[in-house]
Length: 224
Image (cartoon, rainbow, N blue to C red):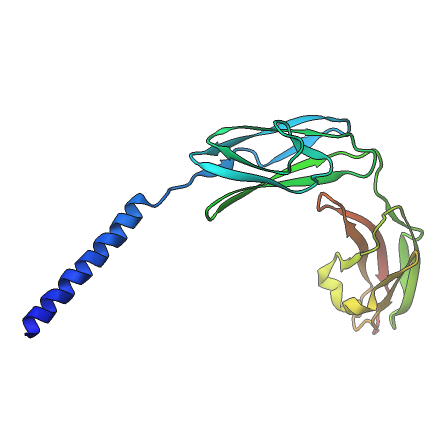
């Protein structure tokens, strides 16, 4: 009886393994991607394209920038189904604002690829400080500088460029930007030497690049 049960278990296991192998053999081997994933465009209206390599049917969706970037073959939709390797063509409108970017997602099954279209703008984004450098005593203190900017959004970020001297500067919550004024706190120096570092106020533009104002801080020695 035990031999019969064991034989039945072996047969069932063999059948299960065979099914797994069959599924693996016929599982789709999707290939999908673009040779070049980013294109740069001038600020006037025009066309751009990507060479897509694929062996299957896939979806292309404009997930960002659909108000100015369109599929050339159908400008009325932001999501289309395509098949096989091809040149994926787009048309775009002129840009009368700041430089901008659009993103297109290619997807099939678990495979994805993102295409990026960057377009120059008619205007340059500006973040400027009215003071380029500040001399700070060893005991530190609270400081502020005026900021001139034409950015529409005010979600600025802060960083210290010279990380070696970072302990001289307060924590991130010591940095504030409010109504054209950038304020920060410099901690007391424990060094016997003068230190120089840069405090940077910046925002990320639509290309993901920094638009910034730098303030050079020179702090006198805190100890003799």
